[in-house]
Amino acid sequence: MYSAPRSCPICGDEMIITGLYCPGCDAKLEGHFGFGGLGGLSPAQLAFVETFVACEGKITRVQKALGISYPTVRSRLEEVITAMGYEVGGEEDEIDDESLRRQVLDDLAAGRITPQEAVRLLQG
Image (tube, helix red, strand yellow):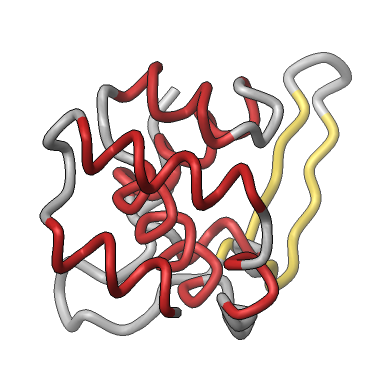
């Protein structure tokens, strides 16, 4: 099965789904259907969301699964949140979280982020 294209290959406009089919009972449903919140995500963003869900939303597990740093996971998550039409919450609430500070310092010590990135993350 193929994924439905989100934009028209001819003119670039947003595509809509106009029909659904059930192979189990041969039922057909016609109308105008959207892709939903996840439908606007790129293939890379969808792959990230799948990994995020498989890791039960635990950022440290996502880091290990994708081999990326904490700031990169946060950045990709924020991109997905924005692409779905939501606002990203402020980091000031998270900076108070001791586990976040520990993670930033661990990433700095391991060389996964620069000192400038660490300062920016810790200061918000």
